[in-house]
Length: 378
Image (cartoon, rainbow, N blue to C red):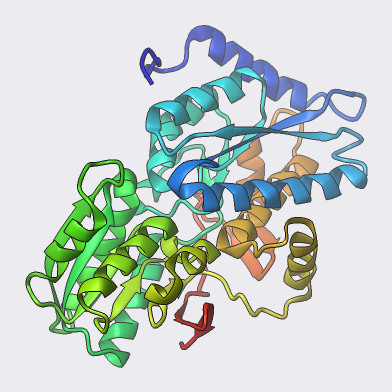
C-alpha cells in the first residue's frame, strides 16, 4: 500500500491515546465498552495463526461478557488483518489507537511486532503477543509483551534432538524472508547448538512466496549439495509445499520444521509429503490440565477444528489483559499493572513476566507426523 504514514503518531494521536487510557480508568459508573484490539494476519499464507488466535480471543471475551464484563462494562474486540505486511500493520494499529483501544492482542508474527512496537511506545498502549518470538524484542522497556518463549528455547530443542536422535550431520536450511526477524533468529539459535556438536548447515536458501521462483526450483537448489537433511523455517502452508517438492526429488531425506510450521494446516496441505517430518512443538496437545481440556472442548464445539498453539497462546494473552483490567488502579498504566501482577494462570501452567514483558516456558517437545497426526517423540 502506498501513502501510509510511517512517521511517529501525530500530536492528536497522542491526545486520543491519552483520552482512551483516561476513559478506561473512569471506574464502575462508566457504561461504555472497554475496547481491545486484535491484530494478526487473518488472510493469506499466515491465516492459520491469525484465525485461530482471533477465534480464541472471541471465546474468552464472550465468556467475560457473560459474566458481567469488567466492573460492569462489556469488552469490545476490534479485529484488524495486518496481511503480514509491515505498512498495513502500522496502519491498522494506528487506527486502533485512534479508536480508543486500551490494549492490543497481537501481532502474531515477529516482523509485524517489530513494525508496530514504536507506535505502541509512542501511544503508551500495550500489546500482548501470543506468538511473536524473535529475540530482537527481548530485554527492552517498551509496550510490547508476549506470553510465548523466544526462538532460543524452541530452536535449541530442535537442534539437540537431531544431534542425539537423528542421522543429520550436513544439512541445508530454507527460510521465509517475509518473517525474517523470526526465521533468521531461529536459524542462528539452531546453528549455534547444531554446529557446536560438530555438525553443520552447508547451505542456506531464502525465499518469498510471491516471487516468480517456484518451490520446485528451491527444492532443487536445496538438494544440489547432497545434504543428509533439510530444516524448513516457514509458515505451515509454505512448509507443506516445500515438503511436497523436496519429496519429488528425494523421497527419503529427513526433513524437520520450526515451530511456526507446526499447525494443523501443515497436515491438511502436506498430505503424504509431510509423513515422517519432525517438528518442534510449543504446547502439549495431549495435556490433561482441566483448564486446557475445557477450552479445547469449547473451541472444538464452536469451530470444529483444533486451536493449535496459536489458539492456546491467544487465550492466555487475552486472559492476561482481562486480569490486568480487573486489577488496574486509577492512574496506573495497563502495562504497569501487568508487570506488577507478574504471574498469570495459562491454559497449560503459570506464566511469569520479567521486567521487560517476556516469559519463560519450558514445554517444548518434538513430534513426528504419523498418519496425519502429530505424535510426540521427545
